[in-house]
Length: 299
Length: 312
Image (cartoon, rainbow over the protein chains, first blue to last red):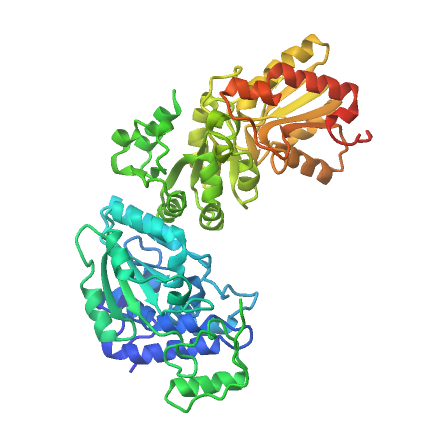
């Protein structure tokens, strides 16, 4: 059931644009849009599918933001620091009416700004990204300004687990806790895989929660595909007084499409039209797609 | 008025100004008590410093960001380029102890490519004050402008009375002369003036141009100087590549101008660390030594360090 598509003027007067029970079907639509963006030039499909539920839940039930509030300084902010999963964000924004759904068909067309990493030219994108390790710093600047103005809005930043290799992330973690930015929430899409390897095989991150706590953040882990559990953790924000919060969301790369799930070679992929249709049937519970190639493009 | 007092007063009258630093307190030591929460020291985290400034600018602030020039422009370069530059955000980046002003710190601290790096970013302005009065006069003008800006901090004493008020993209002519023109900026304006005295005594009337801004640059003054002079000299405490010499060469090529050009800069090397006056002496950037280099280049084009340029 689809409760709300484009958030009308009345949308924000309701508590949330999307019912909890409707998140599952919204996430299916978002994943289908992501799969369609693998056509032609391809996209970073694995990470887009792993964070799809997180974005659907945040935009559907958590963030105080809508197409009408994009210039409102009291809106909640979400920064997509791991920019390569932007297909999931664009699909989410299209589902909620921030952008026309038809724009998703403009993927990689020079006439639009829908490409492999986020552009601020697309309504709903708060800031561009793509180079990893940038937007925790930008988000903490926004959170700092909100605090200076005694605002009540919150700032979310979605980080990839591979992105945690970047030194600037650990700088930002130190600074945010040093400043005591309670209105800042980092969410880690902990799908366990980076571009070409499992994170723990390449540059081990564990024990990750202990690292965040040692850096002064309040931390919780959650199943990043379980809307009930996500609802609980989002409702308890901030996780502690006087400190920023980080949620480690355990996810599966390629989630929702068994022939893509958990595979190291499904980071960036492009598929033929027939393969895309087969993947969408698989997403909707059909048989495993019969893929001619493995779709892998190493970048 | 000091830079610190001017910035404090501006922040007092403008709510949008937020002062940030990566533990570079020397030029703004007394501002925390003046600014309260609008003074933010992030610690020695230049990348986060610049990223956070971009975030503050997204919210309508005008961040004035302080760090040592070498670390602000190089450690945090990609944050300047990607967050501030690509975002076209009104962040004012103040680079402390640029060029020779790093004195005895050694090559790790020598920002000699900062102009090259900053001017390469689309939309970024580059301001190189000759003294503190110029810096203070320019500050409100630069803060009013919504472009990102790199300020090559120099709070030295005035080398000469200024001849025109500060305006974005405008140079000032400090001395007139029709044989040689010395184009320079920042700290070395004072040495250019000393060189001009010496050259005048030697019968070589020399114009001295304090460029103030390298981007946007005062192209009119530059072209006038090229037309009026037998030789143009670029003088800078910067690597030969990417700074004023490159800017002048680019403009000459674009205009189809062929002119004798003597470039005094650091060519493929860092400078010997010492106190400022000893650095100038050792590296040949002291006024009298500059005059000698100009005279010998006038006598013998080969000594300009490049092949002879045909004149028109």
